[in-house]
Image 1 (cartoon, rainbow, N blue to C red):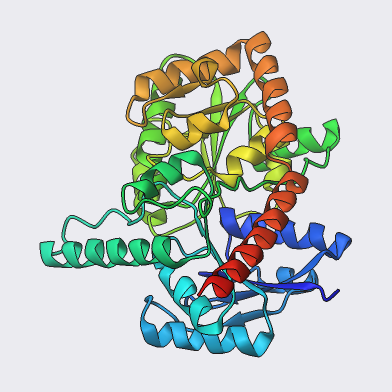
Image 2: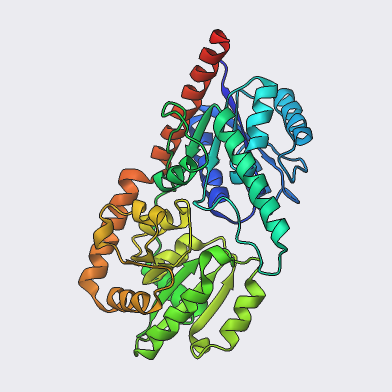
Length: 393
């Protein structure tokens, strides 16, 4: 039996949630040899992590496809046919229609994943109203086409599935929520933890470390994050805030930090390849996002046994086994966040239970093995569905 060949279509291979998952997926299936994965990037470049993917046996190509046009779909279809792929797996959110259209042209099944509750980025206030309308109409048409024509629609959470239902009703046999996953944390020594706290976080011996990992974008709510941290410091909590990531709002957030009363206690660490080690060395993970899909970084925090304080939004509530007991608050409720952070950092019994619950939640639902099994099931279901459609046409 020939090995299944899957083409993943993404924007690029830079630091981010889906990219992190895809690299770990590649590494784990390389060991099992169950199917072969290649990657096609449609953004400005292949990305800084492309070489990592190639080390795990994937071929990483690049085609310029900024918008989901018919011409770009034909271009993608030719690439699919030349590579002899059995399934195409899209991760382009509101641009996924190019994947669904190309798969139809190439006569293979398509799986499209949606990774965020919000289908369109928030427009800048200076953007003309007609441009905002045009962008919204493009997204609406692209998403509706995708939902009508993709073989399988695979939102990463039930929260995202609910958002998609507002665009177009998808039959249950074609909609499959597919949680992604991550690997268990590779334990580091107490000596390594002390070194990271002293040299990377620059945290005093009696201090606590709050870690945030995410792109500097409107979605991640850095302004709210900083405001909550300032309130925490004003209450007398001896804590350091470590920010990992980069992005288009980096300089704007840096300026906000420079004017902050808590500036001496904030560390901007840039993009890092050792997030797993940083998580094991921190005391709390803080994720006050305005919207998400079901963030990989949250699964990583669970896997590392790191207590989480996060936004009370549908996708994050879904990540917790018992949302009513989770340390969550509305994204703009800075006072509530400060209280939750203080409780986690000062109540050792509470934080210990959060660590245990997170590790258990990861093991039960968000492991890379469980994710790989879901992917394998998706591929076989999509192939069967595609064959059935061909026979009935």
